[in-house]
Image (cartoon, rainbow, N blue to C red; front, side, top):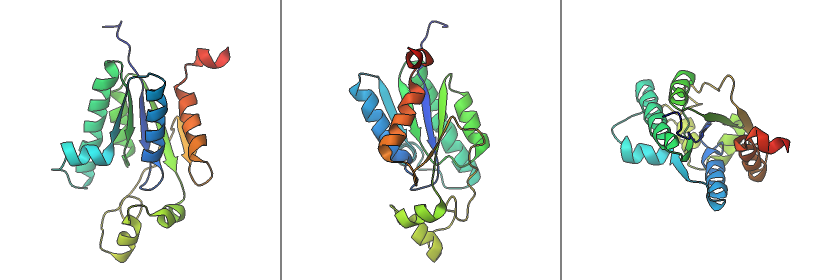
Length: 179
């Protein structure tokens, strides 16, 4: 079993509208184009297919993150680079999910709340401020920023191309960067 090649799991966390899925998709596309076996698990997509029974309580959010971590670990231990993009708001559940994975890169995609509210790509912040959406992470439900992510990407000051390059560099083996 020690001969197995564990591919890395790249876990993007951050608030809604920060750019997790946008960056994750671009990273996945770049890796796929270079011939790397890749799978991208988008939190919203996985929730709609595998977890429609879950709500947005802390316990349900933790279970969703655990499910994502488990799926990612299965793919990674079979040599598939796995990218996860999910809000994953709680430090403890993120840590548990990443501990299932032999190799991981935690990427905190961040931007000030005012920037996210201005982007509001899904209309969630507007609905939360109007009171028609309760429990929005970062507004009336907590988001615990990673204490020590491998990468922190501020999308209010970095282009998507710069963010993608930064993630790809983090996936490049150290030996390749030296020579």
